[in-house]
Length: 569
Image 1 (cartoon, rainbow, N blue to C red):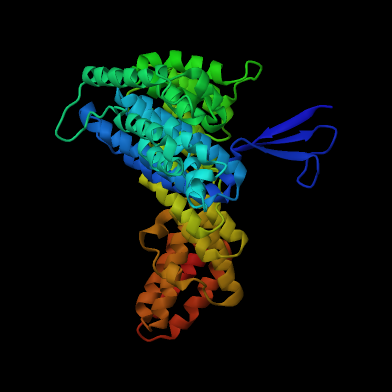
Image 2 (cartoon, helix red, strand yellow; image 1 turned 30 degrees about the vertical axis):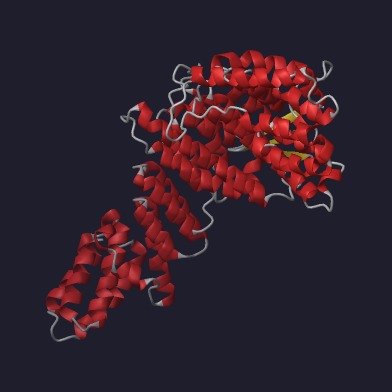
């Protein structure tokens, strides 16, 4: 069998060619390239991120980089907060929540490594925050244990080690106190461990009242590490396996860490814990080595890394383009890669990467994302701003896409026209007005059709509609849409027939106001100008006859002019 296909603006119609391809055929399939665009529950993500995107474009290029960095970090956090807000509303939709979790995990890591560019010392602390944010079940389990009748005897009590694995020593100490109270004989052991946990140095470049250098911290940390190591050599915790394991974790014992795979749950949590207790001053340039070895140590040798693993590893290797490439393949829409690439581009991290067909990577991804938005019945309006901020091809894409917006109502048509007029897209304005004029004429709404044709400056169509107005007048004896015809103004000059319609209506108005002399002059001018349709001559003659009976009209001159008109034509 063979497949036939037809490209659409945001999808493809695929059909088996042995069947007739038609709307009612069950073998015609619609293949959408950006299915998430049509998810009503993700509407908030698209709308909110649009505002953040527009705000980012307004940051002045001439500002020094050091002044812009806090703004970029703040914008990155805003994007993540929108993702988080969506996740909180989508707890029932497991599939989408898992995707958003992965998206925020990747974005947060990129924020730490690329946008905030955390240096040695604070880097591990940032990575700890990253892990804690994405391993939030630790607090939930601890609350469950502490809320029980006897926390120290709870089966999950020793999951307190999770706090240690995340570097949360204060919380770990608070939970360990419960166990110490139950074991008076082991109180000295618990006190010793509590002291080690309390004394663990944490690098803090922003400590109030003091400035700590990386060297000072390293000396302090090594001294603490020797103290912990000494406790292990003395077998201070040999009688309590759990306390001994905690002590071994403090010295970065990788074999013990791997025994707690279930609590760590991921290789990148293992990586950060390993760095915390073995290499707290790791430099960004060294991360890739520890990331690769941690993944290989943690994952089963027979298992193939998931796409998420490959993306995170590429980030730890500082391969931005590989992160974007892998995300483009793994994720089912362009939202993430489009917005992240735009932010990275503003941070001057993608300047060297241009594509072979002329556009840079940022613009290509934004164009793809915006094109997907344009297929949606309401999100298309957001896409306009994305096209506006694609200097190379944005205008061309917008011109092509704007003509595909379904013009369901006049209100929507006016919205589209306003967008086009703001961007001097005159051809698109004319095209839309013509479409609306024809649609109104099909529905016999002559006033609307005439208004749209005037706006389109379409003389031929204005002539056609004017003819219809005159035919209606002949059939009914009255004009419809008087407000429009009475207020044509200079627009009546668009075509001779429209001019005649406007002036003929003015003749009727003068006659109705009993200004017979002015009415007669106007009627004669319409006759002599020869802009009246042939089918309307007898109507003009019939209109002239009552004027001959009025005293203020110079009837011999008027009659002569009328006779000359009919004889000459």
